[in-house]
Structures are given as C-alpha cells and as structure tokens.
Length: 277
Image 1 (tube, rainbow, N blue to C red):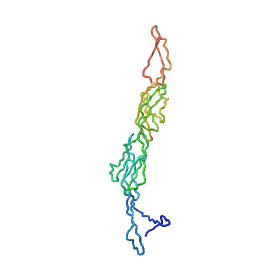
Image 2 (tube, rainbow, N blue to C red; image 1 turned 45 degrees about the vertical axis):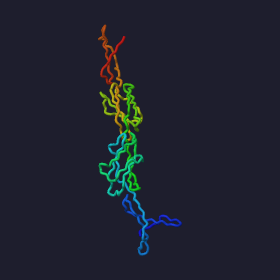
Image 3 (cartoon, rainbow, N blue to C red; image 1 turned 90 degrees about the horizontal axis):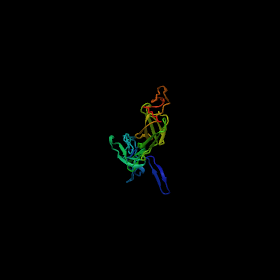
Image 4 (cartoon, rainbow, N blue to C red; image 1 turned 45 degrees about the horizontal axis):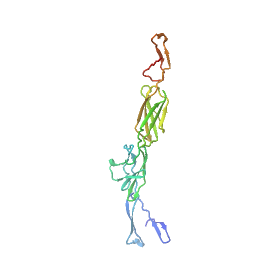
C-alpha cells in the first residue's frame, strides 16, 4: 500500500497523505484513491482529483544587441532535455507582465522586446518563468540598463591660457550615473583622449597648452551603458611674449624695430603688433 503518513488530525477526521515521486514537471495528472481491504479487495469507486506538477524554467536569459535608449531586447535559450512540459513562458519587466511566449518556438524567434514606457538610462530587471495550467515555475532574472541620451549642450569657457571650464546640460528625459569628459588638442598638444569621470555637470581642466585648440567630448554613463558623444571646440588664450624690446641700432627718424622673445609654453600661429601715440 505504500508509505502513508498522517497529514492532519481533528476531533472527527484524520487526513492521510502519500507522496508520489519522479513525476514530470509541469504535467497534469489525474489522481485516484481507492480503499483496499483484506485480500486486496478494492472499493468499487475511486475518489479522484486533478493536479499539475510545478513546472520549471531551464532556458538562460541574455541581453540582445537591440537594447537602446527606449527599448529592452532579450533572448532566451533552448530548454534542457529534462525541462518537462509547460504551456508558456511569461516575461515581466520590473514586475509588470508584458509578454507571453508559447513553448514551441524556433531559435530565430526566441526574442522578447519591451518597448513601451521604457526610459533612457534606466536599470530594469527582466524576469522569466513558465506556466503550466495555474502553476508557475521559479523565476530567472536578468538586469538590463538602457542607453542614456546624450547631453544636449556642452559649453567650454577658457579662464586663462592654461585653464578651461566645461559645463553641460543632461537630457531631461534620461537617467545617468556619471559622465566621461575627454579632451584633445589639435596642433601640438595631441595626446590621445585624456579624460576624467565625474557625477557633476561641470569640470575644470587646468594643465592645457595656451593657444591650443581643444575638442571636448562629454558622454553620459548609466552603469555599463554609454550615450552618444556631444562635442564642443574652444581655443585657449595664447601667452604674450616673455620680453619685448626696441632695437635702438635700427631706430631712425621714422622707424622703430620691435623685437620679442616668444614664451615656450604656448602655441602661436602669428603675431600682431600694435602701436599708438
């Protein structure tokens, strides 16, 4: 008769239970219980019920290349050979049920797209589970971050020959954790892509080459996602000559010869000489 155990006992009723093992996950079973007596004489009728074994989910979730500022795209893999049976996959994003997929799908169609009310730079949790009748499997989660929108305006304001102040305006429709700010000179100070990361919307660089033209790039960052680049170009103030003198030997009644020594730490394309009475 198997191994029966007492589940509950009240003043007028005792409930017995029996554990049926090695069933297929997600399968619906019809369970019948007969009474047996001496000589295995069985009751003429059985008391029966239906039950569905809890399904399981074995497919792995992965982020797809199509994830962007306003869309989350994931893929889900093939089931294991012992995945059992189930009716549907259910996919939710931040606990909001969005999509159901029948089990029988080809590889090319194992893609789920969320494109409603998706915010740029937002951190989402995609959850998947399977359904079999009214039963649900355990869940599998995948964290996905959408790309932030690029900053709308970058302003570069030279403060001196060596220093510049950068400010930028984030897009109000985007969430970002920080910003990468890069700069590179055009003519002499051409060291590649020096940068800093900041959570502010301004920064100051103070080791620039006077007179150089610099390109500044600002990228918004949300976790591992980067926005497109916003650029601004500005020219630093050049430095004046370190000395200026008059060549007295060349001075005449109508002419002066001006001489100067250029400052070494500056980039100058040409010089302008002014004079007045």
